[in-house]
Length: 352
Ligand code: AMP
Image (tube, rainbow, N blue to C red; front, side, top):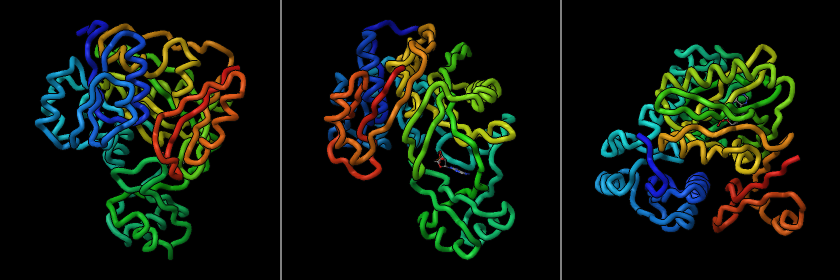
């Protein structure tokens, strides 16, 4: 299947990733149709068509699918069963979603493909937290199995007595407990995979988080990560192949003294790849569209020596006037309303 320009790409989810997908689609002559339950999601402002319906609304999803030539998603916390009405029009398929949206399923999958993870335990109650603390040797990080993102649904357990408070803090949800990783740095492999199994990775960024939220991505990533990138890309390719993934996929890694550890998979374009809009010959957004439309993958070489991406989170957007005045700062604002704490409002890319 190869979809010509003029075809309609459906995007489930109307956040900033959908917005940047729609902008990339428009640039190369494709139409976008956004599906999202909110009134005015920021992606709908830049797309020709918008369906407002619940992610569980099978009739709406069926009609949406019939109006699109291919359907993708920009958000992994989607109910999987209703997506069956989209059949093989959905790229990537539901397997990538099923694995990425449940941390237990994801960890078993990653280990099964042969990658190394931080030691972890399943948690279904407060007693499991104490047992995990003893087994893993605290501190440990509790993460809800489902619906966590940007540090939400997570709680550190620094001593054994804090187990029940941590269980309350994550809302008594089924969870995993992870040993604390003494990592030197974090990085992500972002790659695209075609239906024929061809893959192409982007240059790797070093990612800096604060409070569980990505703050900055920097390329080149430095010597430590450069030494681990061959293994990390091979692992990401194996994970994508095992999912039969079509489109862009991201694997987040910790760079430790003993080599890379996989943190998690995102079955989609990723915040740590926003710098590719200006920084590589083909952006992650265009690459995703190419992969799902059956076009050849584009070149991912850096267009300059170095790039950095800084997220504008919450009140960070107050410095927009300074960024507009800064020569070379490429400002992206997502058109969202209220700048709530922790909300991703935009980003700025700088090339050197
Ligand atoms: P996650 O939502 O799993 O991507 O976690 C968000 C961030 O929290 C990561 O990017 C790390 O900075 C930190 N983090 C997550 N898991 C661990 C861990 N097991 N040990 C230390 N830091 C972690």
